[in-house]
Amino acid sequence: MRAAMFSEHGGVENISIGDFPDPVCGADDAVIKVNAVSLNGFDPMILGGTTGLKTPMPMVPGGDYAGEIVELGANVGDGWALGDRVCPHPFVLGEGMTGETRLGAAAEFARIPASQLIRTPDGVSDDQAAALPIAYGTAYRMMLTRGQVKAGETVLILGATGGVGTGCLQLAKSAGATVIVTGSADWKLDRLRDLGADHVIDTSSEDIVAACHAIAGKPRMGFAGGGGGVDVIINYIGGDTWAQSLRCLRPDGRMLTCGATAGYAPPTDIRYIWTYEQNIIGSNGWTGEEQQEVLEMVGRDELTPVIHAVRPLDQIAPSIQELIDRAIVGKTIIRPNE
Image (cartoon, rainbow, N blue to C red; front, side):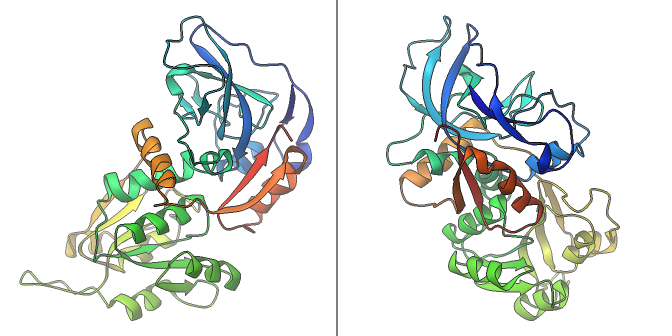
């Protein structure tokens, strides 16, 4: 089959397009014709070898994908048939994440245990479905399952231009929240306004704390009733933003995190945590049920995945470079079979 691959860590110049062994369908597996695969922030990190994960070589990138079943193992039950449209959950127990510790899906075909299959609803395109699992599944669990964001609350989303960020923005708006976002370029902030952001903070020229206080007020503590600050902060950046975020959070507010792209061991100031009785909530991954709900939300026109570009397989290297350069808003879709 035709696939994108790399045989050593480094830059995008290490990615090539060529023949790769066809996947072998085990008794409990399905083989999927990959109609669409989306890129994620971890793709440049796996390529660069910066995660500490053991990556099989040669490696095929791409964790999210959608397509149709072309082969089923002998033990797979009657619930699935050849031709069924699916968007698999990419994390496989015992194998790890697709595109990280198991072969990715930037190829004409991909193998997945049938237990990971999730049906793509009618009315949801393969491009849309492929954009959803890692980014929007993560956003759904963080915002709604763990964060319990609700109408009337104010939510601050740091670095909202990626897949998870745009998912959080849309989910917060659908819940009835007021949303503040941060970004570092005018064109990105304009795009976030188009997606429904109520307030934007340009981190290239504004101080996050001062700008947030101007919008939502400065937090004040009082057992008889404080005030000021945002109700919820989404911070998967870490680094210097961690301590800054604590200064923006209202008494008894929630700060949610699912990662730390700028550093996982930041300086902090725990005085804010005890003084304002703040809640720090972790969120890790997403379930199959949550991924199914995100797919159904798209089918009901309650959510629209933000797609930056749709490209053929031979454009995967420059597309990953765009991720490295932070030159996109939303998700890039690759079509391996075109």
